[in-house]
Image 1 (cartoon, rainbow, N blue to C red):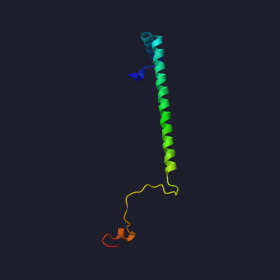
Image 2 (cartoon, helix red, strand yellow):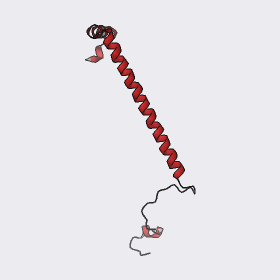
Image 3 (cartoon, rainbow, N blue to C red):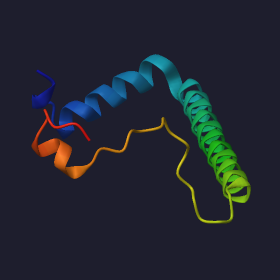
Image 4 (cartoon, rainbow, N blue to C red):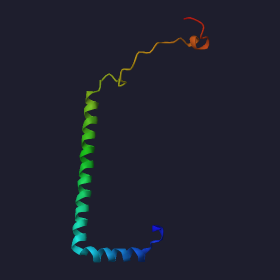
Length: 90
């Protein structure tokens, strides 16, 4: 339904909106939209800064000997022959 709206249709809609709301109301509405976009960009920038600070703190707190793998559950060492013959006891 909306796929058939061309340039003349969009211009007609813009004129109707301008007549209904007036120039002042539309400009104040666009100003509010601009403020919202600015606040959104500021929030994204602050989030990025916090993420960078957290990454820097993790990098500084990381052990210096190069082992960066977290400790996991202990695993049992299985001999290679045990996988070939499951009935054989090691």
